[in-house]
Image (cartoon, one colour):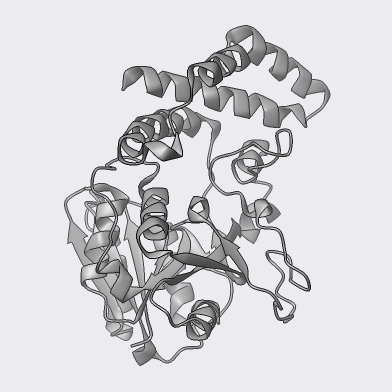
Length: 328
């Protein structure tokens, strides 16, 4: 078997159904790939299980695994144990492959670089339906742009814009059939488990760290560990496109940033050389940026010019991040 798709899920049956539907229509033969759904303790009266079992009736290459709620890292580890493919592809339950050759796009670079220490990063963008329905807010745009503040800072979800195209390359999201002439390599900071594939043999040696029970850093930590121990190389294929079908609201920012801060202490203890805990000087700067007066000023300025919203969200994220640091 060529590739195994591992999808951790938790009580998002409706979106999961769309994701599974897209995986039926891949250009690979059914015996060349498998889809493994790891249900991380959903308490939805069996809805998630029922949906996967409906797909299993017509697709023998679909598997369903249930586990007690242990968060996404543990769910991925559980899925790895049940894989048979030479390549393991991780996607989210709300990531819908944009094209029928999605799996082949991942395999293309793996076949060009069969070494165990090579992985492939795909491109993730908001689903076209969300764009068409006007559901992509300024907040969501900020989340997926890591360079919208002073050209260096921004949201914490994705930062694909930092992966500059090489000579003769194509821009992320282009699907015009053009071939990328130069492969872009990304570092561990781009270890996005929404759309990433690795050799199964490597994942059997190194898996997600169970110390990261909450959101944040469990993926980046694995990427860094692989780089450090194996000189792991992550190749970027912007033609392996996954549509993110998930409306994210501003209310999610506070718990996310607090959890990221808590996880920062864990990674700092393991890898102090990364300096993920901000210095006293940087903490002071964050405090000045995110105090109530600064936030009110940025909010006021954003009403006159929407570009200041990026600065407002960045400052607000630092406010919640500092709160998480205090709680730990």
